[in-house]
Image 1 (cartoon, rainbow over the protein chains, first blue to last red):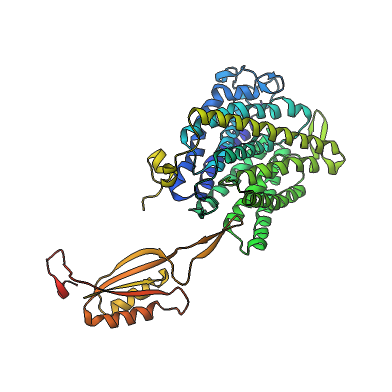
Image 2 (image 1 turned 90 degrees about the horizontal axis):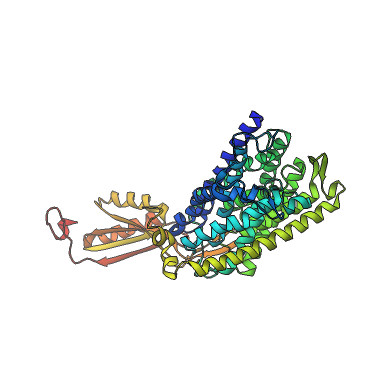
Length: 406
Length: 112
């Protein structure tokens, strides 16, 4: 075991955990004040619930011995066999370190989906849906990409979770937004964010935590981690600038929410590519993410579905762009078994095709599985809050709390 | 006795308060209110989606004065609150039947 690598990844795990309360603030500021706590709760409660599920069975289903290339076995049930030493002989990390780092990814992913159904979902429905989703959608995705399953074997590149985290949550968000229906008054009333400084602070926490997310995905304190750190920062910066310019041209004003949304779009887009591409390419990937994700959000306004906080537009569209961009810009920084991983612009068009196929599989699997889960949970406990609960606000009606006593 | 209600821009509150204090007005009630007049609302843009916000934030200042003071109070308040732009607000004068000072039980002009 390498103590330097181990220390670095433990710190990265802590950074990734910090993203979830960041997300709570980011989303919390975007809803109306009567729903701030219910929205914050969607993220905060995941830190507890998902961590427990992860220890009990989630880690095993993700990284246990391969079953049919789709899911892991039950070897690590209750974390049995996950010890202080490395997972395999000669490994650089404690098995516990790897497990807890991955746990933090599992925590934030179902929390990301919550932006789609904010302000109208029942808490019981949310808890059951998120629990099942973690085991039925996230764990197989994680196994297929990183646990030795199909997508990894196919050669699909996903450095830090473009497919596992962002496309999966984006596809689930689309399913939920379509099935749950619009908020009361959507399209007629103005749904104005109640606290944008909170959203900007949350975006800052996400940006900070993302360094652990992406640099840590190198799984060692090495040059690839440094490259991922730099590409992460540059992509976020470029997207922040480009989004603001685009909306300035589009609607005449540069906005704070635009700067925060742009940064987030850049972070999402660089996630699958972070370790594989050069810093110059990260500026291009991030810059284009600023335009593409802004377009993704415009699309929602055109199509009329109510993805309340734009999970599809930012995570779904941004993650897809990042996955394809990895197939374009991968420059051989990372080698698998001595083979440098190259994209189209470095003479390997096949990689773009593999990335495309992985995007299609990810969207199809995550969307269909999310629809099925939604229907089951809706039949068992119900997914939508009542009209009265929605009108009065979920904070008071579902949680007996009020965000602000002013 | 009359109640003078001054609905004006939030940033004009201090100027109106100072102007009324100069007239030796001893008390007032201030409320944050929302509404619209000819100014209408305003437009806000979130992630490219435009929303019309109908109600604009204003303050309402209420003072009760003796009948012979009403003219002066209205003049001074109107002068202090004026910017000349649409949205400066309104002043309403309303008859008041009785006033009671709770602490002493005094009534009428002496209780103002």
